[in-house]
Amino acid sequence: MHGASSATDPGPVDSETRASADDHQALRLWLRLLACTNRIEAPLRTRLREQFGGSLPRFDLMAQLDRQPGGMKMRELSRRLMVTGGNVTGLTDRLVAEGLVDKRSDSADGRAVTVQLTPEGRRQFRAMAKAHEAWVVELLGGLSPAQQAQLFDLLGQLKLGVPEA
Image 1 (cartoon, rainbow, N blue to C red):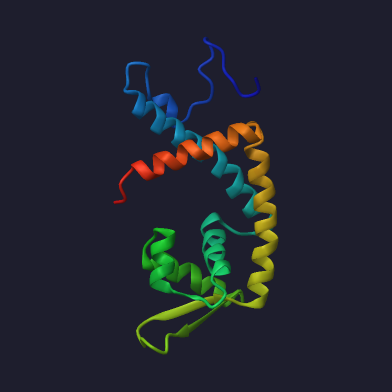
Image 2 (image 1 turned 120 degrees about the vertical axis):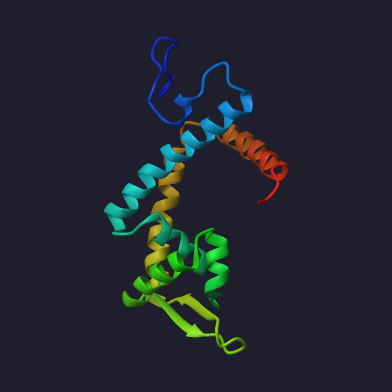
C-alpha cells in the first residue's frame, strides 16, 4: 500500500509520532487526525502560494465572502474564520488594496463594516477554488469513494459528539 510503513519503519515524523501504543486510543486518534490535517494542508498552502501568490487564510476569507454575495460584517468573518478581528482586518485591507474586496460602513450600525468580493475578486477566487478542489480530490485519492463516504460519516458523528467551545 502506498504511504504505509512496515513494522520496522516508523514512517514520517509528525504529530502522530508523539504517541505510543500505551497511550489512550482517543489520544492516538487525535494525533492521527492532526497529522492528516497537516499533511493535507501543507501542499495546499504551497500550491496556493506558487500558483496564485496567495495563502490559505486569504483563500478561506475569500471563500466565506463568495458564499455571501451581499457581503459580510467583519465581526462575522472573524467568527467564521475563528481568528481575531485584527487578523481579518489586516488581510481584508490587503485585499482591498488589490481591488479584490470592497469595504463599506454598515448603514444600520455605523461602527460595523461590511466587506464583499469585487467582480475581480470573485473571478480570482473562482479560479483558486477550482484548483483547490482538484488538489483536495488528488490528496484524498488514496481512499476509495466508499472509504471517503465512511470517513465522512464517522467524522460527522465525532463532530456532533464534541461540544463546541
